[in-house]
Length: 277
Image (cartoon, rainbow, N blue to C red; front, top):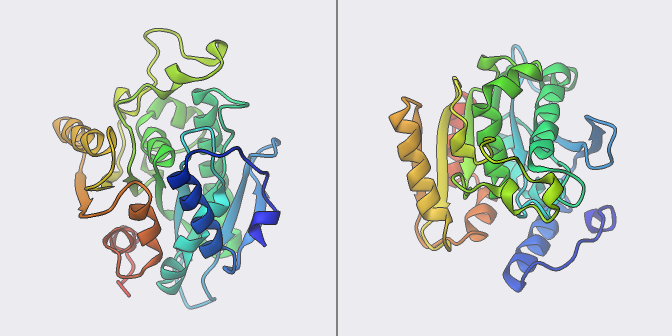
């Protein structure tokens, strides 16, 4: 069981705890190659979900995803339930961990994300993947991570990740205008004044097309953050699509991505040049 393999975390709130349990229950039976290291720290691990072998010239496209949890909670194992419709269409799904705020600054969280991305670019061909057909995404904190990885061009380039490496960013329910590093529980790990921290403070360039998704029933700041960030991206000339899910809250909007009929899933497949299923 997945739940036996992950470190316990403190409760968040009843709704978030129920969501986390549902994620684990839906992900438990899905085959994965677990805990591949992309760095020396225990949190620097990712899981691979592979489609059945098939005739895919050049390899299978890849969707790399980061979990949410407010930078204080969360596991890559929360996201395995997303894999089946992607695998059925012929994609590889990668769910990556990152160090949380108990051991890392916000900048170091993004160091981990870039390290996971670089691992995918350098190694996914060994698992039948095509590193030239890469889409990244995330939910909540993971949405912030995916968007910042794409837009923080100096750090991305310094990590050896080319500008054209990311085909699209599929960000769901992020808080893109918030300086999350300023809320770090350890003052010594907060960014200095004037140092960019909020996702919207990073300006690229990025060749990725953005999709920003959220539920209409999410609490503040998520719906407004999505709309405001979409406007900011458009003003910069960045391709962006808004995707609003009527009746969904912060958790149900993500849980719905286990269905092949989900619009977010269909948009991921389109970005990967795969036929809808």
